[in-house]
Length: 231
Image 1 (cartoon, rainbow, N blue to C red):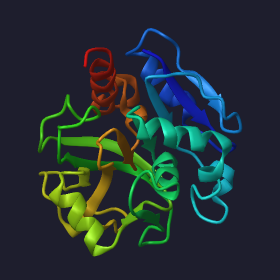
Image 2 (tube, helix red, strand yellow):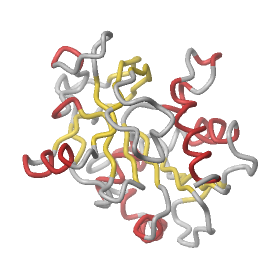
Image 3 (tube, helix red, strand yellow):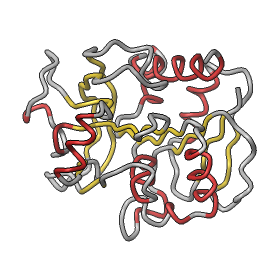
Image 4 (cartoon, rainbow, N blue to C red):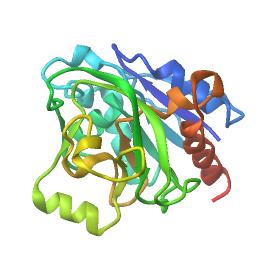
């Protein structure tokens, strides 16, 4: 299995993702510079978190026009799995591989803490190793993490089981008190219609080792690797 991590100026979670992937795949991930449009043939593309281009204009807006993103879009449309984490999620919405957008947090402050999230679907290669309804704990670190979409889009996401994760309380309830950033319907992660693209605000790579305080994120990477290597 070969994976590529897209590195932009301002990426700061690319090495963390590399370590998380190396725990589960034999070949070291390719650290692919965003200005290089010649993306090698890979089985997985990851767009990591950070502050690409310093979040100028809007978070992810400039990176969405990087030369390699055109190739990422083409690969995704051909079925290659694409995972966008935090800023990566923002980039995926800006280049329209995923619907909706990420707005400023309702409190207008940067949030960096652990949150509880609930698995809403396990019928994707990203969430197949979780149980539907399972509660996870993962860190978030963002200023623009409030998911927004129009009513029609939200209905389509819900009706087609495309909401992958929601923010929840310690007892697994999805309610306003458990929403850290004002995301509509407590949405923390969404899938594309073809289910091969996932954008998520929580950072699974930061909870992929007991020494980091938890392993809930490692399950995502191990399940993803297993799904790709043993379809």
